[in-house]
Image (tube, helix red, strand yellow):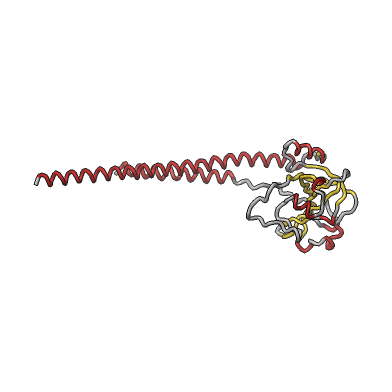
Length: 261
């Protein structure tokens, strides 16, 4: 009889030990998961703070360049040749447009669907610069429908240097439709070859005409450069840090409740 009692006690102790070990294991696993989640949330919050500082610096730089004294085209070339940042540098350019080779970049402007017109500008030295002259609505894609805006002769204008893209920005962006002369991303090589231009004589960047140029007939509408950049990084940082704080609060409440019981 005593042997049976002793056996029951041993079994009970063993089960209790297993239960405690299992409980400790679950507690350790839960704590590990909580720490991992906290680390991820805090890292995301910190990353957004870093992005916030970067975006604020970029916005300040754009604002400074937007109304700066225009530089010469040679200054843009020199800056690009040394790896400098040419984006949004204000520049004065002169030359003659070749309207027969204009390229059309799909775009929207003030809620209207249409195109940005990129027209080759032949410079004094014979080289070519692709110039974004502005927006035209979809129904004016054919140049014959806006002959007044096809400026003839030498022009001098002011605009903003824009760097070329090295590759398609996203897999979600459609491929450029060269036969229809519709571009969905600014592939300067494709725009050059499809227009029948000599790639060796085309400058490796674009210029957006500013709003000061008013074309006869009203089209293209110049001044389409997007200077206002969205800056939601502070809200994102607060969200991630808030989630981390909420998680820490829930865990603390659960721990206190367990201590009381």
